[in-house]
Length: 186
Image (cartoon, rainbow, N blue to C red; front, side, top):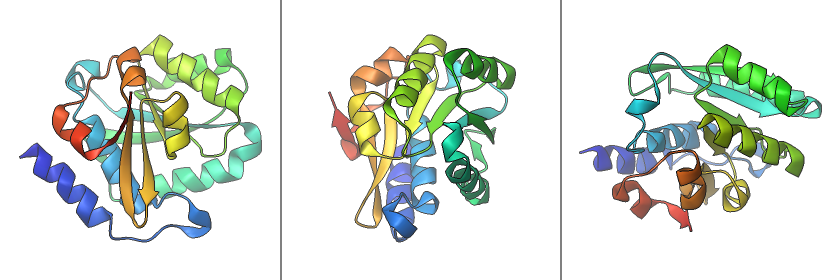
């Protein structure tokens, strides 16, 4: 039954077109990205209360981050497994400051603003591992190199991308049913 829900999300939300500039269409991709997390067999053990997503970028990307947070808040998805979603924008300055935001907001996931430089990607990945948080990307390249979960667009449909090694590093183990739908990186 849950498989049908994910497959339906991919089919229904996959019918919208790409946003301007060839980026990920959040109206299509966000429901799929968040639904994938519910297929982590350890999801329920990761906590209760709001599911807080820190939307992280370097200070030079503040306009892109603000636009992304606005799009996220406008998306139809308001909760994940009965946990209300909360998006918190964060300027990445250094690892210590990021850790303060993780602790203060009781973060559940880190979402990288597309276009972040390698040092930001690495710092977020290190923080995700240290805190056992989901690290989410809106491009396949970031998942290919480090992050556990992402979504990209193939034509006008969202494509789930899962890096199994990275997923295990943050304590996530996805059910076989979602791995069949995803592009899996070993």
